[in-house]
Structure formats: C-alpha cells, structure tokens
Image (cartoon, rainbow, N blue to C red; front, top):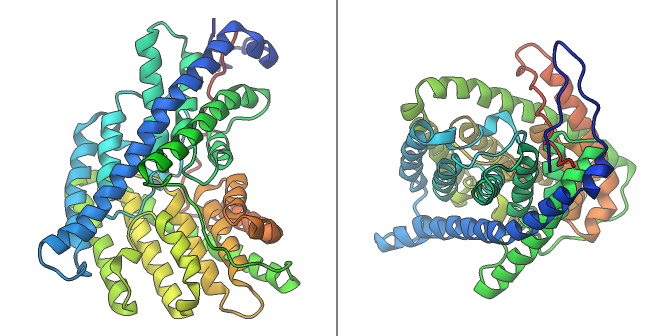
Length: 457
C-alpha cells in the first residue's frame, strides 16, 4: 500500500528514502495509474465546461446585454459597473466560502501540497465571476485547483482510508487533466505543473507518469468535446504566424534588451500588486470593488486614447493573442506602448484583489512589448513577439523551462527558428528577476513548496 515518506525532522535524521523504481513496480502504483486515467475523463470534461461557461458569460454580458438594452455596440464605459459587481461578488466569496476563493495570484503560481476538495465551490465562484466580468487574470490557476480538488474528493469518496501519498499523486493528476489543452499542448501544461511544484530527481518521474496519462486523456476529451459541440477546444493557439528568418547578431542584442525590460516591468508589477494586496486584505469588500472599478477606468482610458475597444485591455489575453499578431501591422508603436502600459496596470490591480491565474496576462503583456520592440530596426515581428512572450512569462512566473517552451511551441515552425533568441531573452529576464528580488523592498523569499509524495509499496 502507498505510504508517506518520513521527512527529515529538526531533531533527528530522516528514514532511508524508498527506491522510486520499487514504487513503480508496486501494485499500488498500478492502482494510481488506473485511477488517474479514469478520473482524467470527467475532470477534463468539467474543465471544458468551465471554460465554455466563462466564454458564454463573457459574450452575454459584453455583447448581448448592451444590445438588449438598446446600445449600438458596447459602450467604452460598460466594463466599469460590471467590474464593480465582480468586486462585490469576489470579496464576499473570499470572505465567506472555504478556501478564500483559491490562491492569491499576486504571489505567483503555486501548486504545492494536496488540493482541497472543500475549496472547490469557492474557487469556482471566484474564478467564474472574475473571468466573466473582465478581470485581467487567466483560468489556469483555478483549473489546477479545481482539477486537483475534484480528484482528491473522488478518491476519498471511493476509498476513505486512501494513504495521503496516493491522494496527493492522484490530485496532481487531476490538475494535469484540467489544463491538458489550455496552453496549447499537454507537454507545456505538464512542464508548468512540474516546474511550479519544484519536484526533481527520480521522484519526479513517479509523479509525472500518472499526470501525463491524465493529461493525454484530457487532451482527447477536450478535442472531442470541442468538435462535437462546435465550440472549439479553448486552447491557446495562433492560426497565422509570419515566417521568421535565421537569428541575426542584432536580434540577439534586442533579446538581451527585452530580457532586461521584462525583468524590470515584471518586478514592478509584482511589488506593486503585493503591496496593494496587503491593503486590500484589510478592507476586503470596498477595496476589491475599487480595484475592479480601477481596471474598468484603465480600459476606458485605453479606448479613449487609441480609439480601440476597451475590451482590448480586459480579460486574460488568451483569445486576443492571435488577433494581436495577425493584425500587428495595424498597430503603431505608440498604440502598442499604450496597450502595454494599460494592460500592465490592469493586470496589477487584478492580481492584488481578484482570483485567477497570472500566466496568460503575462504572455499577452510580453507579446505586446515584443511587437512594440519589433518596430525598431533589425528585429522581425515574429522574433519580437516570441522573445517578449518568453521574457515576460519568466519574469512573472520564474519558470524558465515553461516560458521557453510556451513561447516557442506556440509559434510552430517559426518558433523553432527563433528559439535561440527566446532562450537568451528568458535567461536574461530570469537572472534579472532573481537579482531584483534581492534588492531592498523586494518580496520576501518564498518557502519552497514541498514535493508531492509519491506512492510507495
């Protein structure tokens, strides 16, 4: 039967670690694999339904409702009252439902520990309200929590005396299934979870295999449901990517600059959101509403300055990323800079008060900055887009492998061409972010999340 490894204690040595290969050969590990595969089906279907609901609600409140009230199109001021309502609902959810609505996105993407089934309702409500009403956060963190929480609940319902190690591994597999297609590939989602959890060594493979199995099944379910319903897969995709030439010496210079700027911008967003988070926590209801209104006002300012829809600043940026690249020729450098500033400010306000994931807005902010940089001599559109995404993603998440994979695999064949530039930008941004965090006023060092225990014989 699976058993929890004995950790090192402050007053004595740890028990001898168990052989990971022996764990894999145990009958208990086969049971874990079977449960991971079975739970991957309903959890991925539930994740698809969650994303479909958010998409439909966004269309309802931002498109159908204004038309029903007699407006010709959506007024630029429209998001302000909606985001105020979002502030009220999210604040009440955080205060009164178990789990506080999920993890705090200003603190990064955290996946350590066994997911909690009791937090599922609060996470779902806070995320649906935030994402549907225009908050600048993504669905990935709520889906990770929901997938893991549902898997843990199912295991404990089927076998109340299940060992904590097995519950933890199956909970992780549920998270894998929930985001299997969200980032464009199950592999990117797997890297995100494994890198964020801090797992390493032989134990990583023991935990990774059930997760990959659940993610593979989840990917099939996402694709099948997307085809059957005609709604698509809600996966991060780019349909048209301009060809990229071989990297030049000048482009490597721009990649270094992009990494430096991303580190500075990411640290500014992080420090500001963490500082504001402490204030919001002390006055939850009024300040969450105020932050929602601030996001709406920022979107209105963008619309007034650029004569583009206010919704360009709202939401996670997942659906807007493809059109941004496709229509990049229609954006002046000045418009891109205004979008970069407004999206960053709205992102900061959302991080400190609402619930959601930090990944997609970081990707969008980076892509916008990269496109603005590509207006300078010697940097192509695709190369700028890629290095911006990679640099800003690692600046906000501190996950270099995930940032590199996301920025290159998303671009397909062109991504393989520009991968050396992405690596340079990611490395510079990552090192810069770590060094900036050590300066006075930086956030306190985070305690590393404990690795999920693996099943043992």
